[in-house]
Image 1 (cartoon, rainbow, N blue to C red):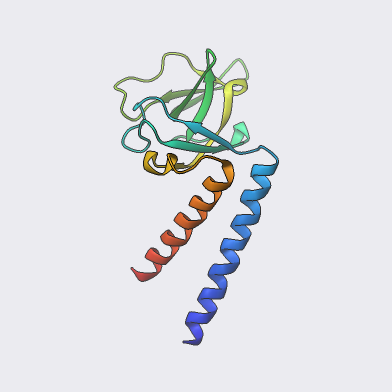
Image 2: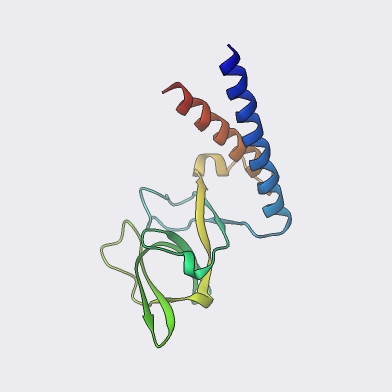
Length: 152
């Protein structure tokens, strides 16, 4: 019973720290909430989901990361398949998981909006009308994930 209390206190502390960090990101507008308009990243991200992205240093982006970038005034969220240097500039080749081919244009650092953090499934997006309701949904999902992982 004592171990359970210690784990519960630890869980509460983790959730509290997560909440503080998340509120800080919301208040400083360093977190983006973006609606997904296509199914190019299916099954990981579905059309109608909302993706949450955070800023990232270009040097920290690696193969397999999902990034959001600006391409001709449209935001695109795709997976990084290649990273290479060209005349001293880092470029990224991306591809939607559901697409057969890589994206035609390499992504430059100036185009990158952020790194994919998580998604809110389209079913929950109808409930989420503001950043604060999204915050509560994310905390609830986090608690559920921790509790279900603990049982298994």
